[in-house]
Image (tube, rainbow, N blue to C red):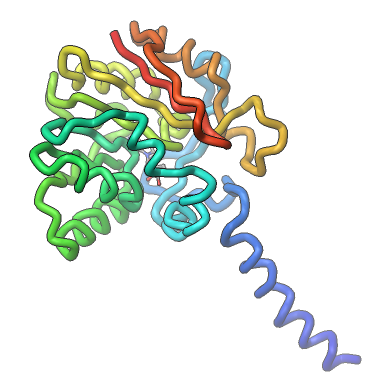
Length: 235
Ligand SMILES: C[S@@+](CC[C@H](N)C(=O)[O-])C[C@H]1O[C@@H](n2cnc3c(N)ncnc32)[C@H](O)[C@@H]1O
C-alpha cells in the first residue's frame, strides 16, 4: 500500500504538469522583470500581470497554429514588402519571425520589456541569420520607437498586460506614420467557452473605448479568428 502511495506521489504531479503545458493561461505563473500590479485598473478593466519569459513554451505551443492561426492574422494586415512593422510585446518572437519574411524590403521592430525575452529575440534573430529584425527594449510606458517610424504596430495577446496602457498607447500612436494602423489581437471576453482567465481577455467594446481615449477609431475588424478579436485602429 505504501509503495502504491509513493508511486502516486511521484506520478500525479507529472500528469498535472503535462496537462498544464497546453492549458489555459494561468496568471499565477506570471514572471517578468516588469512591475506587476494585478490590482490596477484602466477605464474599468483590471490590468493583467505580465507573462514573462518563463512562459516561453506556452507562447510557442504548436497548437497555436490551429487555434490562433498566425498566418490569418498576418494576412489580415495586408502588408506590402517595404513596410515597417512593430511587434509590440514580442515575447519569443512568435509573430516577429513570421513577419520578417513578409517584409523583405521592410523592417520588423521586436519590442519587449522583459530582459530574458530581449536576449532570446536577439539570439534567435542571429541564429536564423535574419537581417530585417531590430530588437528594441522598451519600458512599461515607452516602446522605444521613433516618431512616425512604423506603418503597423501589432500587439498580440499583450495590450491587456500593459501596466501603463495610456502612456504606452500614446507613444504607439506617436510612432505611427501617416496612415499607420494600430492592430490589437485579444482573447474575446465575451466568449464563455474560452479556457483563458478573464483577466487575460478583452471585449471589443472595451478595446474601442481604450483606443478612443487615444484619439483612435476602429477602421477595420477581422472576424476569422475563433478565439480572438482582431481590431484595426487608425487616427
Ligand atoms: C502574452 S505575451 C505575448 C507575446 C507575443 N505577442 C505572442 O503572441 O506570442 C505578452 C508579452 O508582452 C510583454 N509586455 C508586457 N508589457 C509590455 C509593455 N509595456 N511593452 C512591451 N511589452 C510588454 C511581456 O513581456 C510579454 O513578452
